[in-house]
Length: 318
Length: 53
Image (tube, rainbow over all chains, first blue to last red; front, side):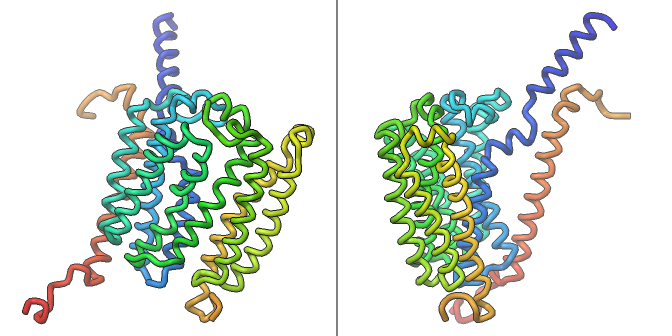
């Protein structure tokens, strides 16, 4: 084999390794975040008191998910500079050099337009407009404005992740009542303790990137207190939701158990010092973070169960 | 015989092209399905006599 052919095959292998695969473009859509969007939007759609054709319902969830994914791509386009610094995000398609920043922007914009128009056509334009507002809120209000300017970034930005059940509800009904906003409030109030627990044990990441997380601006002790206060407010809201139109005995049982555990976890975190946390490698903070994932999933799961039981005369308090 | 010589780029981007092709195919199915559901559900029904009057 000649030197030229060896060089050619080496170059070809290198090109293949650098080539973005379909999966790299899919990763721009933040599939893990998208799974939360799909689930909460599905619960919003099913809990709504108006029946939806299954295929229309499927399309509505799909387009809400695509809208969520598109905002993820736009977030990665804007945040490419800090993603290159943070350990947690270094492997994303743009920092790893697989996808160009402009490609992420183009994909995000194209999918945003597609998702909004298709959701409007498949269900109603109120839902489509709501999806457009959610994408705007996540990309412009949270990513471009709040994330790098205020330690309350997570609190206000959390609203963007809380909109999908409201969009699901609006897609089914075309109108708004208290219940979808209770689902919104549940995710909205859950987001800060969830992310602050993450910031406590991934601390150098946000410091290095210069993102003003509460841990950086107000200190770690204040963050621990904030987690406890937000968790207490969340518990009141979560248990109160049991007595609304989307609640019922199943939901109440789930909410009481989970909120007791969640409050206990927040109390332990608030009492710990940095020395305690470093001694056991942030065990309490890590388990609180894991519990937070289960917390949201099971609350929405319970709302879904209540809604699915209603046709059999079992769901809710009636 | 193929119409043109297969380039190395075609092999390298086969997975990506296949993915895009499948996404487009699914999109066509979704548009078709939505059309059937909307038309058969009466969303695009002709206006009744009372409405016309």
